[in-house]
Length: 278
Image 1 (cartoon, rainbow, N blue to C red):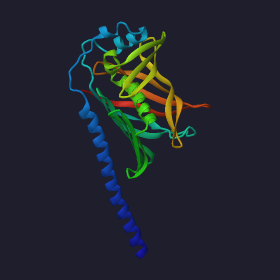
Image 2 (image 1 turned 90 degrees about the horizontal axis):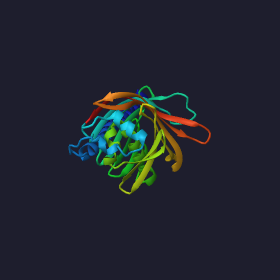
Image 3 (image 1 turned 60 degrees about the vertical axis):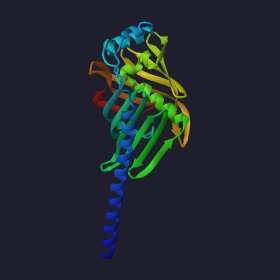
Image 4 (image 1 turned 180 degrees about the horizontal axis):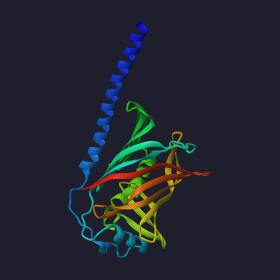
């Protein structure tokens, strides 16, 4: 009976700690999300496709395909995603993942709150953010035990800004020249987009198909965390299955991958299930 009482006591204590941990984690995620939502501009502006007439041909074709003249500039966006995650290149199975993400386009900011299932009932929660010019990644096991809390690192911040630029295809008015994006041609089907935010300037190469859709974004150097250090590594996002969202055409499905020396390592795939604009 004494052993049973001890086991019961341990279970009760762990349950209390788990509840408190989940509450604290939920509060952290809510605060980060609120920072993004409240910071977003409320100014009402409209698309003027005249501003794209001097852009490289594939970029101009893209904007005329995915936007409508006179539509509102998107200040805030929300997306809900389902998908999978692979934590190591040698893994053959994908862990199930769900995530919600908030964006502000002016100022540029986002927070991505995800839950990755390890086995039924056991999960890792990750909050990846770019707020006020700073990147941060925080992760917890069972919403209780901190497994990562990276911040105040230039490499992390640059990677977060690259992520914002890549994911702007989900709210494409943010890619217009008037939103601070500079476009330069690479060839007939590719162009480089460059943005500066706070003290960081970064670029991605966008590839377009014959329709004008963006089918991939690429950089030869995005920082990847390896054993506590950041290594510049080629990175690519593949985009597909364009859908209509409030008169914008956006890719529903995305798969992102690291190009390692000996292999291509896809590590995240998502499919949009909901998107809202303000």
